[in-house]
Image 1 (cartoon, rainbow, N blue to C red):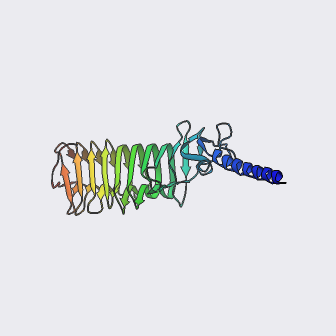
Image 2: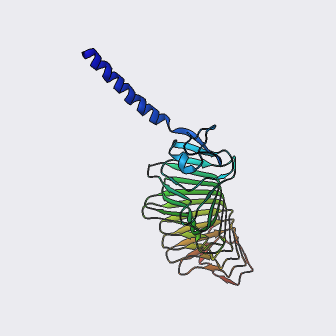
Image 3: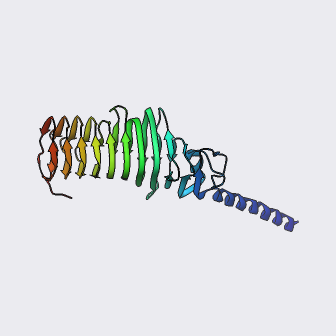
Length: 302
């Protein structure tokens, strides 16, 4: 009798172990989505899912979701380290009345990469990418159109590092900001390179505890091209173009904006210190503006 009972316990234990093993194996390090996929699928190469939301629960932390072919793959909330990459096909997220991608990953060191994706807000979406929490967020080869709140919005309660490379943000009307960034604890640090922001207001919105370095970027046709909203904000503009904005560069008391090697042309006002600090390296090309305004001091090229 004891042998039978022992055997039964071993069988039960085996099933429990098998259950945990199956659960663990349900998450793959690489999953796939397709315009003709199905979220009931395992998201494998030969049986892809249809949406990012359907695939993310089947993708392990630090894994990757890839697009097999063109498609609209739906809004998604990211709560772990992951990469979304639609390099093999035109991958898009189309939303109205909500955010395209929400990033809320509270695990220390988590890195999230969004690559080769187009986000369309139809003039009614809130933010293209809304970052609530994450150690690192990387946007590469991303297009964001027609969101009313922001193309990219960082509104965090802890430190965030944001990098953007080859990103375009544009809107049909200059209502929402291009990129807005703040955190209530630590620093929100942005590194932007080859970023194009058009027809937003403002193009870059520096709020509390944010530090920006922006290189080789175009901020044109906006309400204000670059605006420091709060004391303590530091914004560095290097080899950028700011054209046809209502105001190109505007600071506020206690903030600092450095403008280096940039072209500031055909704006309503080039520089508006607004009781803040705007520094120039003396190598900027400032021409054709209705009003030049003034800088408050000098700086050296970074």
